[in-house]
Image: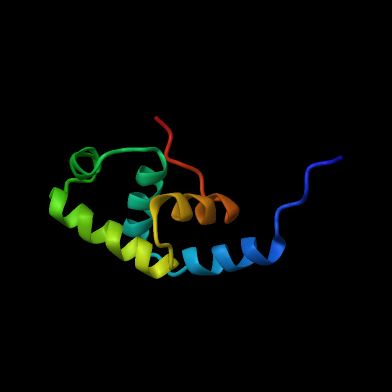
Length: 85
């Protein structure tokens, strides 16, 4: 049987949620999707690890994800790619 199509309604909802993020939150999201730890994200963006923790919390809250796996699923449904490298 062919693979089922992605749920278009879910993808549209995920895109709407991700559109709420600031440019800096998008940078943090893409780094999170790439599996980077807070300290690595902090170094890369010139922030403190505590500030990165705040951004991570804001990203989860704005997108309405209760966990990193849920956040990842929503981000990928919306077409957000992990940062390269």
